[in-house]
Length: 299
Image (cartoon, rainbow, N blue to C red; front, side, top):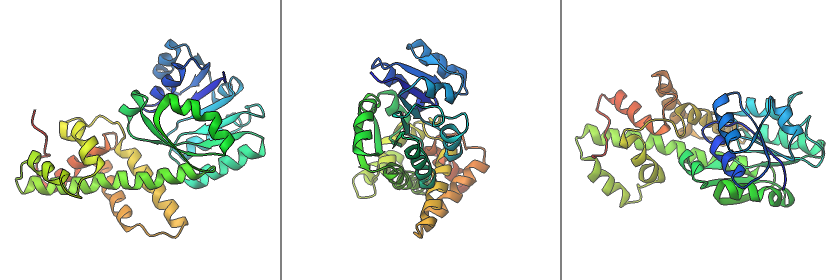
């Protein structure tokens, strides 16, 4: 059984790593926070003092990090994964980053005889807890086969989207819609609140027409509409993803005017101090701007 290294034990990374460890893979972990490392140690994982130490102990090194800078430093840095993995090793990055970063890391790995997989994650933190994540995978056929048992431990839906880089690009397309829908829903429900409409009846109508969407039907009833804005996916991260999407779209000469407007709305929520709240809390930001009480489901 291959030895697994895992760097990045945040809200998504910690349950993902735990689900791999529960399949009895030998595992070495690193995070800048102590508590999630202790949680993995309780499951039998070994603690490492740096990404380099993770690499030296691993056949496959997995990263789940906040953004492009952290990914580049952790994988490509002098004391990072790539410089310390043995030839024949593999790096799997599950972070949401820009295509340029993924392509740079993939090329560097290939130059050292190291496999590379980009496998960003779909769905939410509660899905990661239950081992029900969705993965968008960019990899060669051989590397995909090698990491598939790990993906199966962490998730219930796996899409091999193409070669290296295809997973990252698919994730940006997916997150474009997922994040934009939060702003559209926020505007629609704040308008309903201003009109004095009953929330339950409004949702019943919306879910019966083509206006319905996964955020409104699946995520929001469990989050902001229930009064829960603890972050499963924070407004700060959604703003970061919209920035990555706009950057990648600009490089591809694809205009995204709606994305640009939505990013400013998310930035306005951050200016209100809401950056660490769940991205469904865009409803509360929109209602505050409109001067209406945020609607909540009864009971």
